[in-house]
Length: 332
Image (cartoon, rainbow, N blue to C red; front, side, top):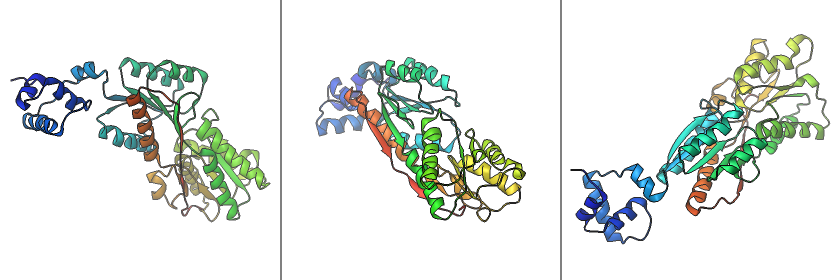
């Protein structure tokens, strides 16, 4: 026998409207009636058709998420955080990955809208007018993570303050020659803000900063290795700085590999710091001094903001900045 809402209503001795309200968690239902409906559902194992449910509620209970890369620990922690919230409220996540291709962000925004998701979360790596225009035109609940995009709700880190505090830590420990490995300024958070926090602190303390001590890299270990090689001028042309601030843990680990290969010791000869508090940052030797941006909390907060928009049918712009923790370990 095929179970239907009508049959469930007959078995629970309630109206079909009451069953529908219980299934969709909407409208008033007395405690006694709700218990009878739930008892029948549990006894029969009834599962409502998602398609039919979507037609009734105008919701698919699916959230679209656009990530820069699936393979990074940062993305994993953010998704875990938001998934904790969405599962609690009966939502599923549809993941996409741009693989750091800016054009894919716009492509996936359009794709997810065509899939009729109830809302979209973008873990953004850049801000450009075309992306902003596309976000504002999709007419869906939307939250950006990592970048402050005009006109939409955002959850961000205080990237500037984190880089500044890390640099102040090194200076406070007596380091006067400090290098920097960053990423492209097109990434306004990880690239521009963290670099500016470093530069402003160096300028504040009137420290000497050689041109070759500032290098831009990609988001991977190999790129950190290459950037450290350039800072050292192949360890013959330029003197090494006594410390290096890296804007991600992966870049820091790449830098550490190069330093060790050339026979130098960390932190005796040169200190290295990262950002991100990845699992591997605790496992490398020496353990890496880093910044914990508490990515699970970022994912959770973004999920709450999106659900608020979905449930209220309002797209009010909200900005939220997540605190960070400085983790001092053995690499300095």
